[in-house]
Length: 574
Image (tube, rainbow, N blue to C red; front, side, top):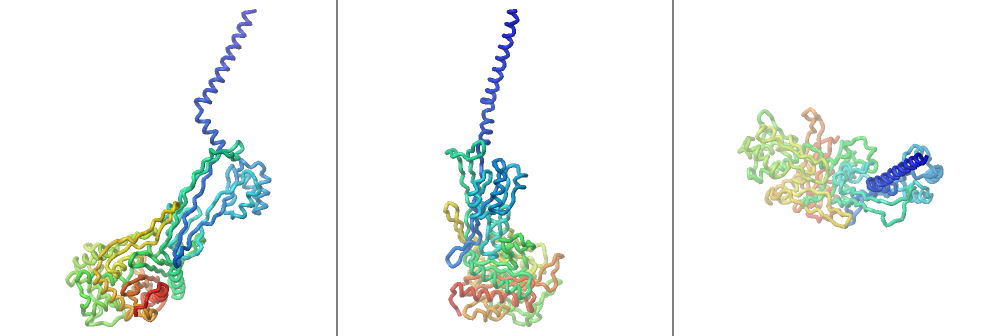
């Protein structure tokens, strides 16, 4: 009897010891072995992390010594709910309906935790929502990109899409710099998710994006866009484009395209080509504007002299199996070098090319022109302007083609370029020999107050001598006084102006040219002696009588330049 009782007590004792050992082992496992895991779990249960959105940098342009925002942020609020912390759903629904007039009961009923209710709540409405003091309903800062100048310089700027990503233009090119990086707010909460006032709350401030100040002059840009719009519409043209640059620094003062769009309403655009800055990204055959570069090459190489003449009695020249003719000008037995520019003489451009080869378009002639176009004048090299999708140009290998290709190139066909490339290279011809990189960003303002200014950058120097530069300017001045740009002469009675017309056929997809469709261009500058403004105008497929360069592009150039020299306070020089 006693032995049986002792056995039962022993069994119970052993059982208690085993149970105690199990509990102790579990405690050791939980408190020691699993300590890190449960520490993290507790921290996650009693803390919440919030991302703090940075402000995107603003973009400014110049207006008579003042900075004007052209891309800025509108401070809105994002309304959200976290259903885990809504203790009275009916009160939350009624309160929000009272303020916003919307019934969010379905959204709250189907949400599993966090849900966005509205992404654009203005300040006053946000204050009304906060006054409701409904648990589980919150607001966070939300910035929307707005463009207060509407369509002004739209293709230069680009836009920010609904995902906050910069697209096209400056917004796309400098997206990372403009958008900054987010901060973080890590707060302690109680079991119900309510924040606890504690010194352990951690806040990592966001790094706001840099502001960018462009070189664009607001008034010049507006004038150019206004003239382009009215002129393109009057001519029933497909499109019009213009760029204005300081030839002595590369500073871009205006860069415009029409038709355009409003970046505030970019989703309404059906033709995505409207987003593209044609002046910097679209390749085209420039036509006779290239005769200036051919003449500059010939003069600089010493293969022709400015006082030289040649026999152009037939008005045509045979090159291999092709015949190249002049268009719209009388024949002459004594054609001067200046006349080649004044009256846009195709045979004259071929004559200059032939002189590189001792009188024929041999490989030496082709190599000579290639060297000046590609290596000296940089006509096949992207400028590096701060715009996306700027293409590199190309020029056929002089050793792999025959004379016809280079005869066409000499007067601007069979070679493609961009407007900004042509303007940059032309600047080097007329300023005494230095090519500057075109630039749109004047300076950047860091969120720490640091200023990063853009200094003029020389891409090439001494591409022509001062003598050649002066001769070319004199030749181009005759285009305005006596040639295809004569309309400009009477438009600017007090200022000397020089330039060159260009009319080129539009290539078709099958390798030929579109019948009856042309690109008209005019590239010119003022004043002639010391150029301050260099401008190129391009009109695509104008429906006006006459040659597209002189009849469509030149009048637009004249109207803008006449206003520009007055706006810029350029002293009269005639």
